[in-house]
Image 1 (cartoon, rainbow, N blue to C red):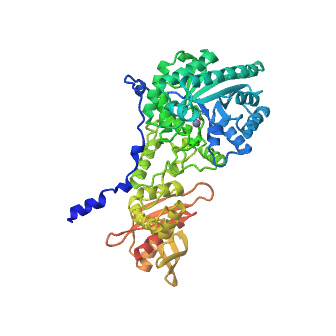
Image 2 (cartoon, rainbow, N blue to C red; image 1 turned 90 degrees about the horizontal axis):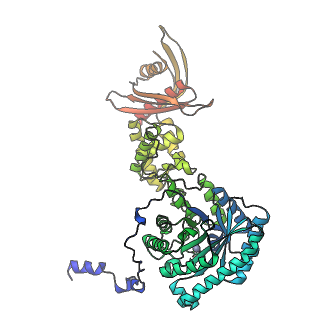
Image 3 (tube, rainbow, N blue to C red; image 1 turned 180 degrees about the vertical axis):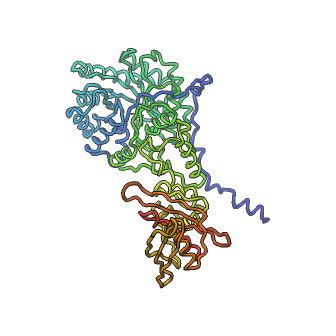
Length: 571
Ligand code: KIV
Ligand code: ZN
């Protein structure tokens, strides 16, 4: 066999390894040539409804305890949800008890409406009404599956029979909620043709129209028609087409709020809800971080923050994201992924050197106040807006360059290195990151800097020094220096303390020193303020040696930096 054939044999997948894709049928999009939704822009927030305490809760390995439900409830209220689905009280005693608890303990703010889910069965409708007695405002969420497949394989019902079931159930809701209304509860009906996306569109319109005919909504007192993508089956544009088609064909559209409830089986639950809004929907149901059945529901945080990043008020308050993450994790026992949009630990972090550099430069332009609008490379929003900080935007591993090192020293320790020193120090950090095969935390970078420059090993150590006035405004410096194992006294005179100390080193130790770069500034504010002195010396061959000294006393810092530079020269 020649070499080419051999290679071809190795790379052709064997029949055994083929994916059984023929098993699946492509979703058939609806014909809609004159769609208008692609030209729309989302420029205002929808009505949000959290379903964390129902769809989210029912999908948990360990459903929330009453205390956890309460904690989640308070968080949702704090975030600003005005509609919150709190359970399926006719199906679960825990849910029933929770509904009673928040009603009886008067925990529902006046501007918040609770929503409960109920199947299209009279005994469940009656029990649901019992659960919400005494509430001021209730959304009664009635659903039945309308999907072509489920009608055939689950219910064995014709279209007419399914319409009758929905209409009858609506009639029962009307009768039983009339009693509630007579005791002062305001009731809105939400109807979901469950598995809407897997339903023939004309049938979806027909069944929703039948429900509307029974309920008799008005323009002032609308019905909510919730059109779920119960299982996500196609690209989000297909959902948008289905919605545009539905909205165009629904009689009395002005008497209905069109609500969306997407799941995330294909990973595009948020995109589907977004395109659905563009197609004319008014309301979004979803959960925090997309918790929910299987791959989850539409993640309302991502969706709201996407709006925010476009300059649109999301009408949800997400400024304390760390707290939202903490409460959500505690209640659901699911950790928020480090890459979760807007909330994950790493979503505002750059490890790559070129990204770090661009962020640093972008932030410098921003600090100059040139442009009030946010425009920093690699950062879609300002992390500060969601309770984060600029500091966390840069972390250092072996992929990072000098920009990352400079950033950490500047932002965590207030130390700004001159470029040649940065170029000299960065490889030290690079070596450490490679040895660690991971991240080097700011403290470790600082320790490396201290070891390399501030505690630079070498022949000399400054033990003590004394300054006095010399002739003609000069300064005299007497210092005690350890050289190897010996302690010696040196003395010199100069125009200032640094000059005098250098003169002492040159004269007594025969060290030719020439200062070519010098900067000194305060490291931290307050009475404990430390000064840092960064200085470079030249030797006779014009080689440059950097040294660094730190002390509460500026002169001590400067003299230490000189010793550090000389030690580095002798290393
Ligand atoms: O996903 C779904 O279809 C639902 C309905 C009950 C609205 O959760
Ligand atoms: Zn759902």
